[in-house]
Length: 118
Image 1 (cartoon, rainbow, N blue to C red):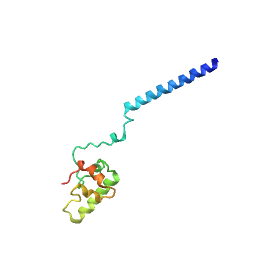
Image 2: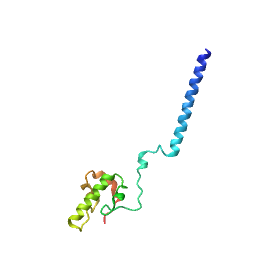
Image 3: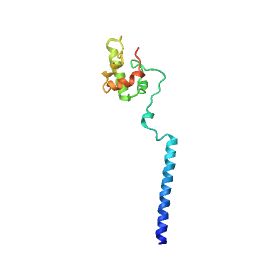
Image 4: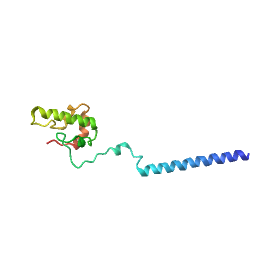
């Protein structure tokens, strides 16, 4: 009987130890920011609007929903377009960005507040 009681106490102590350790881990994660949701990590902060007609690829990748490949496609399209007539810009309003593969109406809508056309 004494052995059974000792095993019960050890099991109880183990469960309590695990709960305490889990609490410490949770506190550590929340203090270091590791537990933040991905949506809060993807917030975009720009000093001013970006013009896709002359912005470098490094600026374009900062826009929400654009990765390196889409930003590169914008620059490539812009360079090939500007070479045709040399006068008018490749993009005159947000919907023109839909000419780029992978950019649809929803992406354009998300970009609208971050871009300008001159």
